[in-house]
Length: 349
Image (cartoon, rainbow, N blue to C red):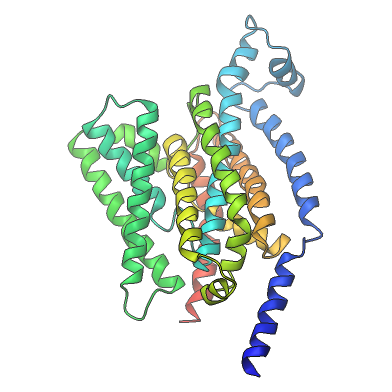
């Protein structure tokens, strides 16, 4: 009797998750409009402001003899597009991590992924300074895998099993260790100035080459994320429910980890350690669209791109004409949110 009631409850949960949230399509369409508006503002404002008419002409009627057209095409446009993609990368990575682990504190910046990638960049800069841009990206992927592996290993061997807060604490500890090792390497091999960019987190100097390199990663990551989105939804109900429905949980987790490492590695290789986008956005998205990851993932991508584009614009305006790292802007937003979640989760221990 109890088992049948439990099964009925699980079926109701599953059916509820399958329903398409009424507001999801509105969020996607409205989010796209806001993102396009934010892109135009991002391209317009900087050391030299240009009006929206000039932006339109530079994008659709480019004239290489006009200086403002060159600035928009070669400097601001690739930077704006990169901010959208990287924000989407981090938000989708955070959503997948939270869904797979059922841990509301999971995100690339907290689970050691970004610190691992930055550590690998320090090693590459110190020992292999002639590495190509694509080579640095592969180093970032490897470091992201190292950081994530260390965090999950530490959390798994913790006394009393792995909980949300213990996993977050393991992430903070591993991240601090990797950050310290990176600093030692940077100081000893005199690459601190180069590495400062990765820890500050910013999009200054982004070129078209960077955008072209991460486009295939974006296509792979988002398509693969949508393919496993239904499985992540079921997995978010609990591993027992997932296995009871015949799902190969190990395969879903393996694919999810590969997607997270690819997206986060690409993001860190370009923008450095930008934190909290992957923590805040999935929570906002779940509040707006419900628990179905077939909607959470695309909505998170839109909202993540919108947040980082706004943060990058704010980074240029908050202390103009000097530029504040975008990572500082996202940290100001994310740290209070993280403390609130940690306090809420701590009550369950």
